[in-house]
Amino acid sequence: MTDIMTALALTVLGPLSVGLLLGVDRKLTARMQNRVGPPILQPFYDLIKLFGKERRADNQAQISYAAACLLLQMVAFIIFATGGDLLVAFFVSGAGNLALALGAFSSRSAFGQIGGQRELLQVLAYEPVLFLVIFMLGWWNGSFLSDSYSDNLLGVMILVLVAMMPVVLIVMQKSPFDIATAHQEIVSGVYVEYSGTYLGILELAHWFELAFIFAVMTLFYNDDDVVLSIAIKVAIVLAFVFFAILIDNSSARLTRWDMIKLTLLIGIGLVSVNMAAIWLHTEGVF
Amino acid sequence: MRRDAATRSPWILHFDTGSCNGCDLEVWALLTPRYDVERFGMVNKANPKHADILLITGPVTRKAEERLVNLYNQTPEPKLVIACGDCASNGVPFFDCYNVCGGVDKVIPVDMYVPGCSCRPEAIMDAVVKGIELWKRKAQEERS
Image (cartoon, rainbow over all chains, first blue to last red):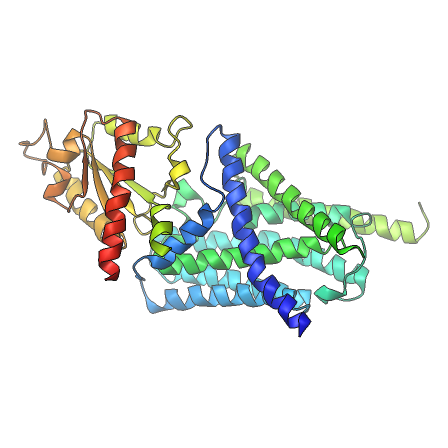
């Protein structure tokens, strides 16, 4: 019963804290640009407003894909929160991204089509890296169940954690990798044909997706002291978000091919180096 | 709560219907650190389907007329239309030109008029903040 309550609390708290984090993100971005910026709760105001707007869609399929996207991202995070298999959560979250791309393809808008194709390219860029990170976690731990992690992995797998940086940049829709939702270039791409409530549904799905990505990163540190454990987990996520904002404010958008090359090179490279280091260590080389 | 949240998050669409770009510059000035409208939750979305407030500049040329109606129709309710500048308000000095409609309100319903040639960013901000009250009423009427 307590487990179910904890899982339920996590399922609610996950997206809520992501909303708060996005508020801090917008405030920090504004401060970096010498502006005052919106209130920290701005993402919640935006979301509530969207749910209050007129419901209007291009076609029925678009609504189904938006609902599928939210449901799949929600299920992915719930699987994680209930101590389920990380790999299953990863594939369900990937299916959610596919639903987002299909939703964009379902309308005849040129920007939507470009956005959908770019969304698929983003998936192609970051999912192999995320898969490798999860694979490394499971390989070291001996299990992919999210509640079976009890070691401090920061020492042995710090490069694997750093490999998550391009993944976080892509999922947070930050420069130089905000390819699918390029705001002034293709007018937010995949989201272009959605409005009101349905846009709100997709925004919420995005929060759940981010919650899952951040949740994977929290597995790198575990300690018997619960307070310390939570503090370090939060610090890891905050550090990644801070660096994402820093990179976002100091870089221009790359082309989609550069994104694929860079993400795969950095991601697979760092994970491989880390894997080689662990292997050499177990072989007694150092 | 829904209504209060809505008024804290007005997303903007700016459309130039044939303006000399004087008012457009002032609209864009709103996004700069000096005026920073994002502190009121305003974001320039450049997409009618995401927008709540339409900031329209220019006297509406015949070519732009259909596009303006299209953008207006694509914006989901509740929405607000603000005519920015003298041209958008009543078409001056082009009001009797053969290729001009003569003001935004000749084509779509307008909620607020911002005077000035060009209109000052402070005046646009004032209109949006005042317009939010109107928007609140519109949302209330729609619910009832």
